[in-house]
Image (cartoon, rainbow, N blue to C red):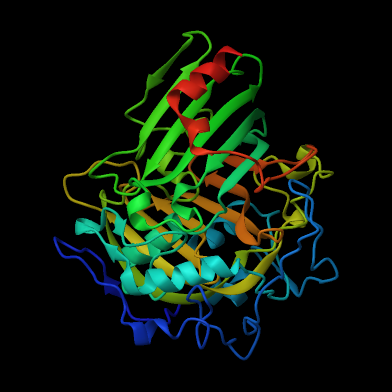
Length: 447
């Protein structure tokens, strides 16, 4: 069993509410902890100290692809099925299963670059959250927080989970990307979508009372293939989904009306993923956590996908990325990082296709970078990787490619493929809350 650095903490909250940390504890932020709560010091070996991350590039054109700031780095070594036992202490169970399943798969490990950075107003927001944010009853939501992760010094698994759910991702975001489902025989179904986000939770100057129980608003429009083109999904993501579940609508061109979709949650199959992915696997995990008991397992040093600038380029072809059984490993980068490990066990009386779920959360960004889903018999079913970069014009750490592997059927699903396009995520796109009303979507659908 791999060594877990911190002790385990049970995070089933019953009816209690956990309070914010004392002001004296919050003063650690920016001192021995980074401004978002990571351990600032290195490990004295291959994880360096955090020294501020990548600086903001104010000259970067919004929506332009990002030059690799670490292009000169060379791989330190390669991990494959033949030598993975030598590196077992720093591999997740899911990584080991993937390497065994696909003999041509490998992880190229590069020097660790702690590139995560955020605007000063995000750092201030996190520090403010630390002293006033609280979990709601049963961990169903968070109060007293805005802007970014509410619990930079977490005490339990649910606080770590909410740090991921509420991490800063900019105020607005617009991009077009391909999502591809790949069969065990290598056949692909590519779907081109346009995504638009408005993160109300991260409005500059907003107070908790201004949020109206809203995290973000999302509009996802299918552009291709022709038989799917024109469908639009609208989501109003709520902060407390037990008190007020997410609001969602879908427009289908054949029906020519926008209708509510109350089942867009939990293990409902995510549309056009060939049922590989559930709705609550989008962004690694999303939505209400109430189906599970959550446990904080501690911290661990592992090799994770990071600084994925090589695959994040407009001139990289989809055919070069999407191999028959997995993503092309020559385009990927792995580094040693510290992660928080949390585990979810399905509660008695609840039904979900995954009985156990384990998440590995990057300490520098609060991004879930690995997810492992187990079936009701305790067998590993799916492994998901999030390949992140720093979009340094903001700056913000966000996923550029998310890949889910179905180990039972040998299929996989990749999302975020903005390759072969003229632009990537645009965090300066002019969007407002009114653009995400049902009436606005109806007008757009008729154009």
